[in-house]
Length: 285
Image (cartoon, rainbow, N blue to C red; front, side, top):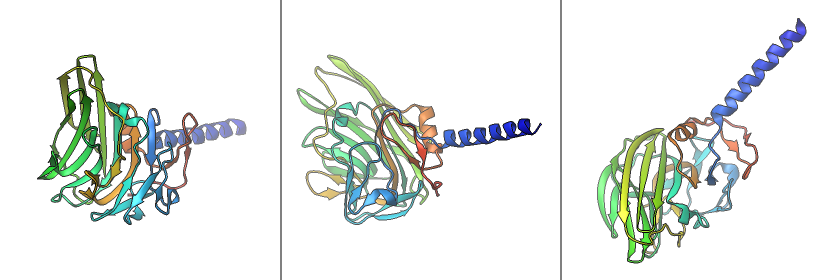
């Protein structure tokens, strides 16, 4: 009898632990880089990439503050940003990719950049808030989110973007995911871009184009988090907090976006193919 009770108790405990682990897991299939911005991974001016080899370099003096997951970086909107490197060959794979971050801000009037890279012509990719940059002319559009992407070809750089109203400027944490899924053929191409906010698809855009030898190109200048740095001087600085920044080399599915949105614990993500283990602290809100 006692052995039966012990077995049942053991099974219940294992079940609870398995359930908690499943709920807390983030998606690691296709994960390229992951900057948690927890204080243990901020060393002087270096933001550790806990999954890949793309440690970020911090400019200005963003503060480490309580985040959605452990700690986050707080950007002052003046001179703070993080140089995330060119991400190796990731730029050439941007046509099938995902960007993800948690953000918290109240600034819905001033144009600012969440993430951006911009070569002399191509490539040009990122997400802007409260405005649109067209040929380096800025149009203020309060309370909006504007994702964009470009691709190269024999006749220069082509691109596409979209703007959606977004209720994310309320001093609460919001989960942003930008997925891209393109197919390029010899003389044409087509693709779909989706913006998810807090696990819900808010903007889905299909885009087709014609033209020979089109391609997504490796990034020629670093990706900047929290500012746009083109044609040399940083501007469009982000005001607020950013946490849990991740890149994937494939578009996350809707279910995977929900999985990451609902993840409740920070993880010690072991590189490529190893099992994840729980860090120690729960996410704070």
